[in-house]
Image (cartoon, rainbow, N blue to C red; front, side):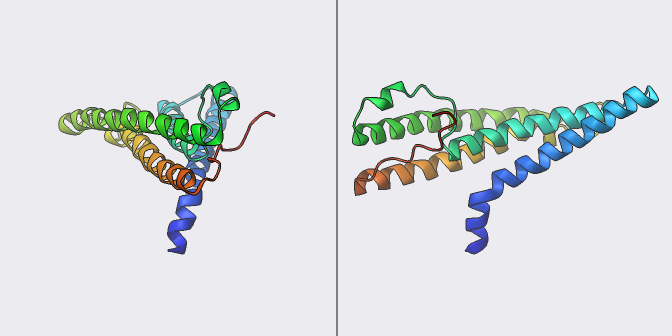
Length: 170
């Protein structure tokens, strides 16, 4: 159970760190190769591109978890705590519907790539691995939204103020 709590708390952070490290290291190597040796590779560009795509989708799930996604929250300054909790729940429910639809449709692209065996130009690796960034990201978003809904419902029932995440600027 300790491992599950550790994963729940840090899974996105570690994945983001890994993809960011891959992205920065590959980009640095490619810049040095291009500027010093006047040579670059297509595989380096692909690694950077696909690492960035995974970063974006896993980052979206991380933002949902920390309630750090972009939102217009001026209304939240003027409503009582109970209404705030209900608005958060409504927003999460709408986002959950959208995420489930996007997750469903994202598998179509992966299936087509799987069926026809498409590979990347530089790495010569199946595109399925790269296209899976979208379903993986939306799966994580769905999991985090369900967790958020459970937390918000429990807070609402117990009369606690809703979790509002960390403020970036105050």
